[in-house]
Amino acid sequence: MKTSSETKELAAALAMAQSQMIQPKKNAIGNRGKYATLDKVLASAMKPLNDNQISCTQPPFTGDGIVGVTTRLEHSSGQWYESSYWMPVHGKSGQEYGSLITYARKQSLAAFLGLYAEEDDDAEVSDEESKKPDVQAVSPSQLIRYWIKTELLQPKFLQDTRSTI
Image (cartoon, rainbow, N blue to C red; front, side, top):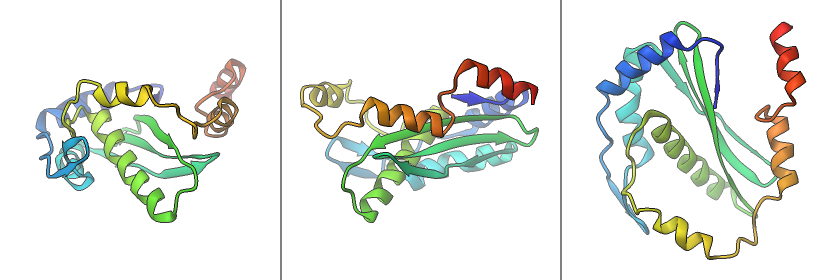
């Protein structure tokens, strides 16, 4: 996660917004049980965020076999929090990319705000998936190139240099 240099005002406003949020209604059923769709997560989040002068943006990104979103919460003071959520993709159609972006938006925002959008499967899916070989994984070099390109990974001297420019 990235943040502005100061976050005190945003943290206070976000705590107030979270106290006003109602957990999203799980309105859909999928292979893994009930879950809240993106519109229900947004309905739970946006009014409390906006009432506390917090905006939320989630621009999508693609490249090097991945797709995802960067969720940014920004307070009227200019203070911000930002985090990216991505998944590997291979040979997906435009419709499938759209579905993955919608999924990434929902998961990223729900996790960022402490919203409970899905039934807890006690990591069963993770255990099942870890037993399967992942033949379509993103290579470490693809991931590192992406991190550098999106500034998620920077050499220490670049971080120091940026603060003095």
